[in-house]
Image 1 (cartoon, rainbow, N blue to C red):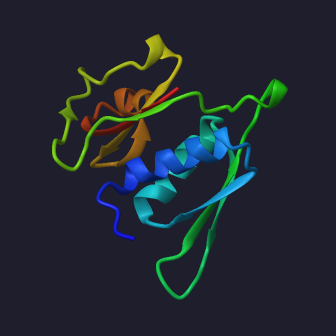
Image 2 (cartoon, rainbow, N blue to C red; image 1 turned 45 degrees about the horizontal axis):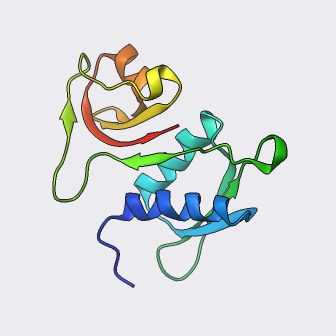
Length: 132
């Protein structure tokens, strides 16, 4: 199966697994998806992730995090920069998600980081997605 937007597919797989109350979901791996998993784990949106080697590109096994009453920790996610239209911002113009309750994930020259980290480092870049 050919996917044109791998980051959008990544976010949808996590949301769908959470809605179906799965404990984990397997996603085809890439370096950018591994960085997204790292950030989501640091920010508390997923429980854990693991890279599994196979004879192809590898698999990321993402453990979904649930709160009280089996509500998902990741309430929503939106792909901002798409393959047809890239959105770049300077460090002054980085958007706030849900008035600071969510995070923007930004690909910068210093790596993939959250909006707070990018403002602190003073770098801008491509806004990949927003998570809340």
